[in-house]
Length: 238
Image (tube, rainbow, N blue to C red; front, top):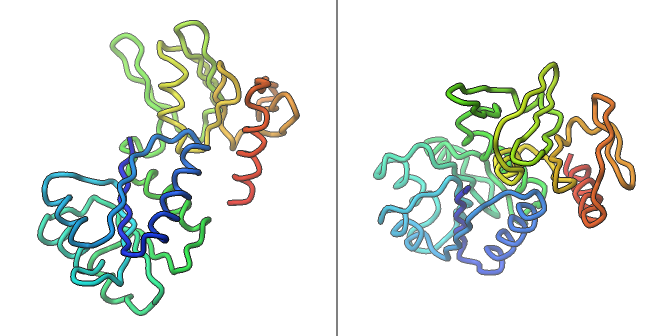
């Protein structure tokens, strides 16, 4: 579960950011928990009481405790240098003040959807403790394969077959466990039995995808429209 906070005293902007993130994460099968706050004090009290986030979208211009103060308190008072902070502002005059807080990114208003999604992807990649490695276990041994090398996963009864560059193996698990782990890397579930790496799709057809190893995999009828929408969305973001 990837935990996200949005803090903006403009409820319309806060809602807009939340909707963009929810739409993208639902489409990409990424499990997130999003909390929305309308003041810096409210967000900081919540964090100070023991609740943490992986990523915070933080407006700078807020009354009383503004975004810069919240960021400084998170870094200096709470000694939290792990939570990623993305600042949002209609002004671009905060360069030196932001330097000490070490934000992940700065997004100007009005909010750009592509930039918002890209900051989410970057934060999720940076938070991944395996650093782009898929890890699975067989008996007492652990195996690791670089995400970029994985072509697709196939579910066969209670086992998962993993096909990667120069590697083919099986391990016990479910296809849902796999998609929960790799969806943030733009893997797509095209069928109840198949999860494929978008980067290894050579060609989209109406009812199947052709992978980089020449194998054709079926797209289930119930998912064809959704897969087409995902394809168009990813291509627009590139």
